[in-house]
Image (cartoon, rainbow, N blue to C red):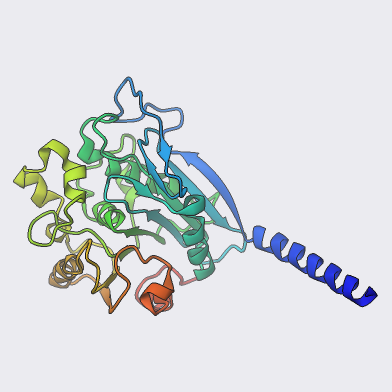
Length: 316
């Protein structure tokens, strides 16, 4: 009986130490994008309050965008940082439990010093005007904040990447490709430099036959029949020689955002001699994220190898 008690005590101590070590792997910080500034494109009188669904995963009615910053306490000499743009079809921000913490942990372990998860404003015409500009405005501001905090956060400004999934993939691609017009007030061109982009089952085209039925309507709202805007926000049309090295992953059985979106983007990347890798999964559906049971494969292993060999992110 005495041995049993000691054994229980050992288990409790071990669990406590494990929790302490685990909690010390990274620090967290919440930063409002427009703290002390007028939030651009917000309407003067906003009566809607931000909501979070019962599962604690999806935000709507966002009028005060933020980034959730996770900083690795084991500082790497490479100085790599990652901005994460969650999906949600531009109707919600599917940031996941604990504001993207679970995804941030994967990338901190991969070797990034900082992972910043963006909760951007949605193109909600009850909250904002010029709604199609708003998500990109917030993404530009978030990227500039990472650049401006590079010294404090042990970041190399030349080693910042962006990742986006689904409509967040469209936002990430927009951040990479639509830099000819800076939407976010006060942001400078040098604040928008990126070293790589990672796109998971991205929304790419706003044109038929492969467009996602919801994203383009939510982003463009009453302008969704404007062919000029449909073409402008179709990312396969915006790739250039300046597009960053890109890693794309999509599942063949994705019935929401069909994999041909990624193929269109890859064709444009190839045409402009942009370094890229496309990984096509047999299964996983849409929104598989880090659920490796759905995909049958841990896709982050190959991603990490690609980031080491094809980008400068992890080079000291």
